[in-house]
Image 1 (spheres, rainbow, N blue to C red):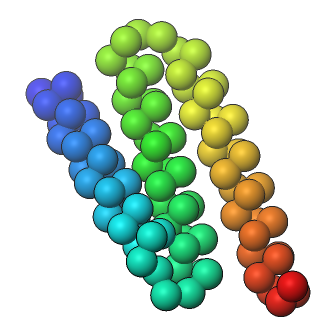
Image 2: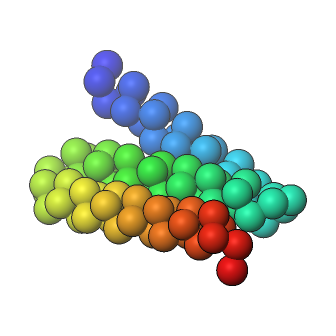
Length: 86
């Protein structure tokens, strides 16, 4: 039962990545593109966690954590860049 739910969650994460990729490519403003990129990184982090669960290799959890921190820092940098209006 748990594996079925996690498989469905993984499929929904892939759909979220595809939809946010569309918004990233077609987004009218820079803010839309930044939010879409953030959604893609969060979804891919969740997929890394699911991959670690299925393969019983918990190093993927560490990779997902570092990836999430780096994406958060990247979004903050881009937000400051947009705020200053360079």
